[in-house]
Image (cartoon, rainbow, N blue to C red; front, top):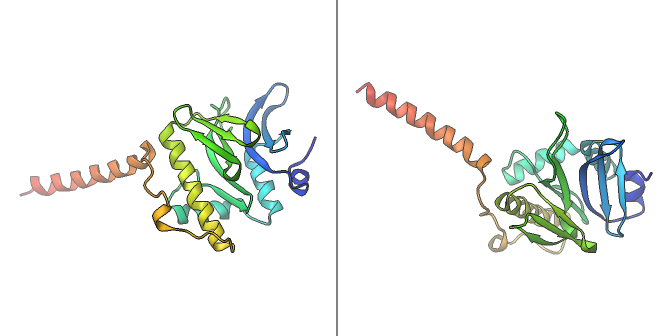
Length: 199
């Protein structure tokens, strides 16, 4: 069985990293490569991500923290790992056991087409990955990956630089984005009601 390190050392392009339930193995991670290969690793997807980061001398937690600050997004941030590997998260399964991940990662640089109505991501080598996310959430995740790619190229000496007019900042709002705003508005309403009732 190949290790993630051997895949990376052989310069095999990763298309996606997916959590999977496999008979007789349980919770495993599937890596699909551009040459048509599929590798099953008997590790959680989080462990595999840490191994990939370690190969590039990066720390997963610090990458996530930096992306949270850059994108002003607390959860589900893209992971820029190299000039050919930028993983962005999508929901690909419903966990059967507590603490199992529902999130898989797609290599932005291997993406050929996004089919939002079908929640389908078309990758190189005619691979298609289906997501459990709705179209708006997929669009948001994809646009975050676009921004992340531009920032990565800018900070790592790429020829393409971030262009404000082309950057899709205005992606659709999800329920998770709205909830804190509604809580804040409810708190303000409570304060104003209290002030008015005391007059």
